[in-house]
Length: 254
Image (tube, rainbow, N blue to C red):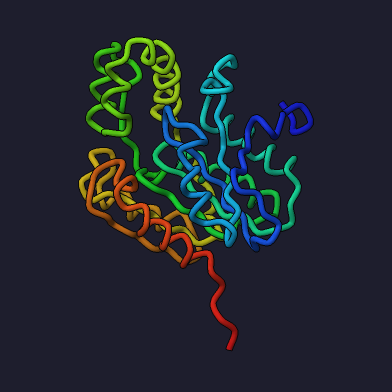
């Protein structure tokens, strides 16, 4: 699949488009998530930063399409969209959970093409070099729902609605399969700064696993730890946004 056969309007959502923002931020959702999760982020950062939120296939207005394949294939499709969506402004990337792995692979593709990202923000995800043998995608529906409740990323009412479950369980299971079968291929470290953000009580990421992102860049690294679990950012949105703003604001000239 090439950039010329992909529809950028399906993949990239700019909820608050602006030409005055000096930088863009590409936001990639978690397993089962959608682009609309980043609408509040786009609203809060505009017009200083233009947010492009990725809509994965298989959900919401793309529910008629096949789900994602491997994370590397997904990263390639996202990368093709960035190339198709021509813009000379610097591009930073933010990904939460599964989205962090995709963002990392997109950053690698960008650097291989000579376009170093301005910054990589990785949230709620262990470093690619930190392997865990996870098999939630192989559990039955009850096991998958129990995992979602444990992580508290989806409102309990939605999980109790059988019609909603019929629509989303297949997509979520497929996303979990892609995330859990992802394997990092060793290679050179990135040349862009990395900021890792994590919840101190996240059952999916230890502090050591989050700190290991340091090994994946030759530039600056920062680790930010917040109270909370896997979806710590839902209750710490202001602090997360401040972290992004600070990192993407150029240092004053002397």
